[in-house]
Length: 255
Image 1 (tube, rainbow, N blue to C red):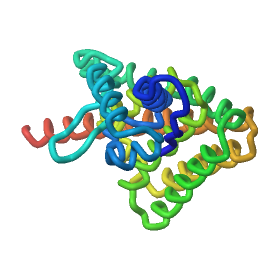
Image 2 (cartoon, one colour):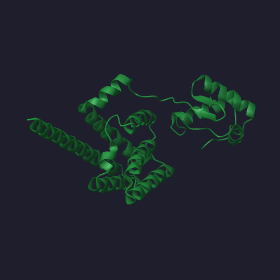
Image 3 (tube, one colour):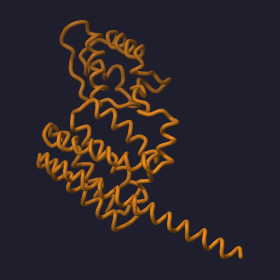
């Protein structure tokens, strides 16, 4: 974790500000465990009493929480970007599902372009590492891991864009996606032809970001999410036709 030694002002106040910034920038994530008190005090270059004072203040602000016999954790500060009743509506209406994909296409296109320009070498290495894990999961035909890594890959690009508002908004929306609120990503990763195409598309996104080509990065994201939208639309149409056919068959059998 990238903690820096504290050099001036009231030590506990400086510790508070540093941890707040790490949470704000998404470096420290909700539910993440902090190092032990001794280790963290050494990394920050402060005394343990100063650290305890800072932790107490951050707990008062509901940014950190202590779990019995487990340590100090970043609190679940994000929650959902949407009311639960609205989330239920999302899950039951196709219009919301496709608008979600189109919103992602716009936002992630911007994020990919920014990542190509503003992402650090470390950011780009993380993106490339996740993509290599996607290749490995693809070779093993592990659709569950591919679906999970797909979300991680997209979030890594968003994190590399270094836009704080976009980061927290999209992280909250990706949590809903992982929960299957919008659509079941696993369906697409179970189809071999679709899986091959998706891997190539992620490869194109990765290559564009690694080349620091913002236009190519934006285009790769747009092409990918256009494909996802079309694939989902085709899947839903097939399901609708199958349902109609089954109802007709049931009706015939009852005669």
